[in-house]
Figure 1 (cartoon, rainbow, N blue to C red):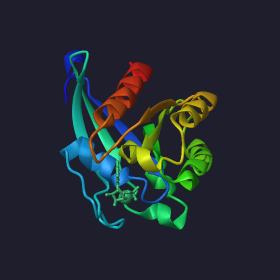
Figure 2 (figure 1 turned 45 degrees about the vertical axis):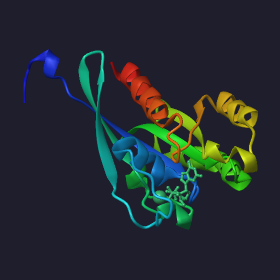
Figure 3 (figure 1 turned 180 degrees about the horizontal axis):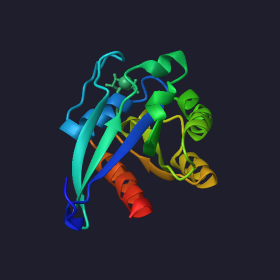
Length: 177
Ligand code: GDP
Ligand code: MG
């Protein structure tokens, strides 16, 4: 509780959505705790993790939400989306059906959230290049058409994970400041 401008608080809620088993929980655990689980169970998981990052000398808290398996029932509750400033829409580059679901997830996001939400399309599991089922170009093309940031990541070998979260957090910051 302070009137000092320097102590202004930033708390950004970010949601992770996408089909089951695309790696949502592992992207979060890789980013927040630098952990990866080869046999992660869909039902295990915390509601959210808070990461503190510094942007332009300001402390920004990113509260990143995980579905904890709700997506198996093809719908995530509106409470999950409420108050979100950013969203990661994740598919698995080795499973085409998960890429085809992205537009449905985007529609669901848009019905629950303001269009100003910072959105990043993520093609996860890029370490599985040998069994790739969606090209980088297709991902980039969809992202461009829908006005999303785009990145391929690997929660397994850490490729682009921090970068993806940081781009979204910085975009939110620049939207609100
Ligand atoms: P969620 O259902 O979207 O939360 O997916 P999980 O994070 O539970 O991951 C589902 C499965 O994919 C697990 O067996 C993970 O070990 C695996 N997985 C997650 N991310 C990656 C990745 O980047 N590369 C590979 N090869 N496997 C991954
Ligand atoms: Mg999960």
